[in-house]
Image: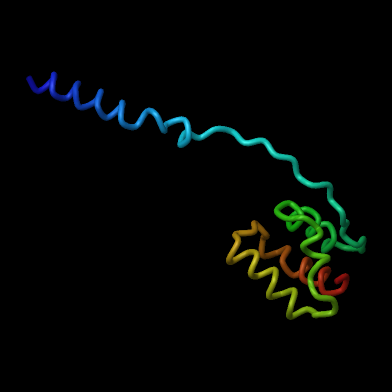
Length: 107
């Protein structure tokens, strides 16, 4: 009797949840990224290379170029540290200073 009760319960449960299942099931999404409308300012050294590889991998260059001008090294240090600590940017400690220096000089 227990097996029959369990089977009936399973069928009732399935009947209750199935009609909405297609709305809650995961399915792949397809989307197109907008065309990049900004490029990093070229500069000698590792800062440009590291910024290109590590910062632009997560967000567009527009985000960098849209920041307030001439804020200086303290501003960019705060921004880079925020990206690492708050957003989990995978920037190695050894590359952080070169990125901050590059951004402070170039933007």
